[in-house]
Image (cartoon, rainbow, N blue to C red; front, side, top):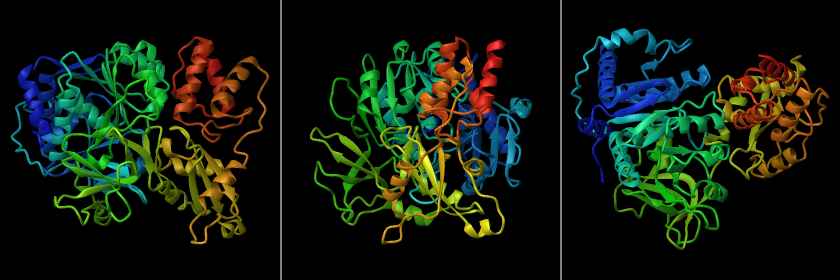
Length: 585
């Protein structure tokens, strides 16, 4: 059931009402007419600067008008769009640029230290040149087999993989979005996901092509309460969010939000009971490699058991297979294989791993390739699918799909590390923490190198990894316990972590301000006490805990505190002083 492409769908929307609102960001509002003409101008500007059909153009930024109009312009120029999050370390951005064979990078402002072979285009400094271009439509024929976008996602071994999604795949997704959600011109869809996640493309497609409009909200400096305020201020009616983030949002005040999609991680029953009453709530599942979504189910309150991931969307088939690629009986656990029009082309620059993941079972008569997910599920008696878990060491933490081996590979490149194993400390919920168990190179120690510590390893990891996957704890050991096969004994390592004193046993100041802040840190970090020199990230903090700390302190002191305050002053004593300064001002 292949529909028309993204650009054709956009043109149809424009033909219906050019003057209607398309995108709102802050105080800026673009109509469909303005969005169409501006994207035409940017496309011509890109072509004038050497972009050719088939090239890959990377967009570096955060949710906003620029990424939306740039995606349109890139596709109108016949090129491939690669969205990147500007919050990532520059070394990681450069690695992705090299891996993707991107030739161009577009951003709002100039970017330092980008690969020399990349032609960088800064929107702010080229507004006049863009405005001088013709706003007339471009004549780029629709090619369903051309790559529409590529996006990085962790593979089942090693570093991130660059998944390629064709225009025909995107067309299938658009058909599903239009038919399933049936939005009206009164709807506003939140565009809030990081550009490095495919959920951002889902949001853009839904907002622009399904009858409503797009409301851009960058969550970078927003607490969940601030984010909820923005949803309410912009009258957002449709949003796609992870369960761990939903847990932080005050749901009672968001009555205008009539459609909510939970995605990115396992949705617990309590989230359904909290959010589903009074609105449509869905639980969506799908790997990046299969164009974002493969199954979806309606979430209804009052049921028992964990929410299902529903059934395959139209044009998609789900096969649950055993280790011999044979279908398993209903009710039994099997690995999820996905077939149909949403299955992407493969991994760029990685033919071997593509061949391992895109397969054709020997019994298949369709001739199409199945995508092997590494996820396990079973068919419930009523026909829905229940998600069981991952086959390998990929995890979803705070909405981020990560690979523990990628973190290990990076830490193993440290000159004083001989081996590293990374484990999730608490698997009971979606914002569990990570611990890195590290063996120091004894030969380097004999040569006079100083002993490693967690702070040094954290600084090393932060040069290449997004903050969401930097381990919260670093534990140095003499050796890694192993199984008879020679592989690390993960159970023994988990036991070591369970019996180790991860940063704890500290004393806090008796000063009232310090006592309030110390109590707040301890409550959310799970420690008995904190000391002046403690570093928030090194003692187990991460972005969601930071949000909780700032929210509690804002409520306690009755003043607005920016989320960035904690990341700018992560040492406890410095943070106390920063809070004191804020309260004085």
